[in-house]
Structures are given as C-alpha cells and as structure tokens.
Image 1 (cartoon, each protein chain N blue to C red):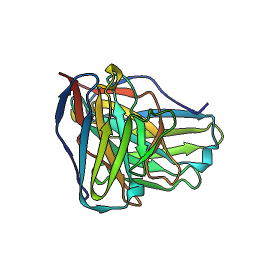
Image 2 (image 1 turned 90 degrees about the horizontal axis):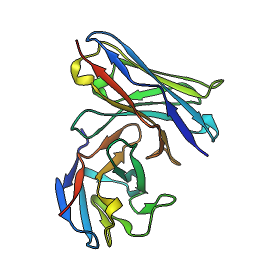
Image 3 (image 1 turned 60 degrees about the vertical axis):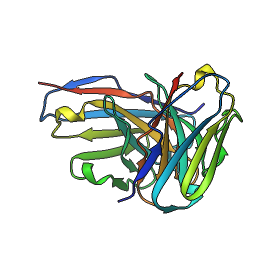
Length: 108
Length: 119
C-alpha cells in the first residue's frame, strides 16, 4: 500500500518568513505523479503544484515545488496572511490516488 | 469558465444511502474523469474513486469497494456518487473533482457537500 508522510504536522511562522513543507513517499514515484494542494476551512482544495514542480494557473511564484524519487518539498517564500492553511501532497499510481495527512501552516 | 457544482447538504440515518450530484460546465465533458474525495471532521483528504466520463469505467479505493457506486450522464454533464450502508464515520464533506491533464491530479473541484450520518 502506497503511503505519503508529511512533515511537520504543524508549522508556525510569521508573515514574511519562508515555509518548507516535506512530503515523503513509501516508494519512489515519478515526478509527474506528485501534486500539492492548499485547503482552507469551508473551501474546496486548490491545486498549487502538479508534476512535482509545475505551478497551476494563477498560483504565485512564491510557491515552489521540488524533489524527486521519494522526497518532495513545497516551499512558500515570503509568507502572506492568505497562505495560512493546510497543505496536502498527493500521488497517483496509474489507477489510484493517495493524499498525505497534511501540514497545517499556522500564524506564529 | 470551468465549474463543478454539487448538490446540497444531506442528513441520513445509519444504514441508509446517500447520493451526491456534481454538475459540470465549461469544458469537454468526456475528456476528463470525475473523482470523488471526502474530508471527515478533523481529518485529511481521502480519495474515494473515479469514473471515466468516456466509457463509464470506474476505480475505487479499497475501503469503498462494494459500498459506493459512481455514475455519469453525458447528456446532463453530471456525475453522481451513491454511498450505501452509511455509518456515523461516513460523516464528511464530499467533493467531486476533475482530474487534470494526464489524469495525475485534480485541477478543478466542486464546492463540497456535507453529509451527516446520525441516528
């Protein structure tokens, strides 16, 4: 069974700081199959990154995805108040999808 | 623009069934799968399954196999999810989501439908 692990569970930072979120896969995956989402209460999740590093339409360039194999990272530079949310990584293995447990980005 | 609009909130008793609908617009319907994802209170996102709008083929996460039915209608551009034998731990917000180019991620989502299962 494919498992995604995200760390940390919660990240407390201030506006203007940089956030580094980690996603680790239980087995190596192709870059094309790794995506990141932002999720705020009462809203639908929003696609940020697909293919490990390609920003979705309208996503600011403060958001950067990187990594390969089993280790992937979402970096958010110069945090803005609107960035505080839960972030999920997600993988696709040809037929099924798996989400990581999420990282909550909180105000410090 | 691309839109997925879901049906309204539901309250069901344990053992009952629920059907959630997802009406799409703004894109070529048969070019993309419709997926279903849920979020239980205080929990993360959980993928339920997808349906091909092209041929009706389906695929499910193991835990939902046999308890969920996905359907799609080209004429109305809609997808439906029926979940049977509801339990209190099925209480969640259910989302439909279109998979993106290459079918590896979800690029557009419905607004979510809250389903409460309670006696």
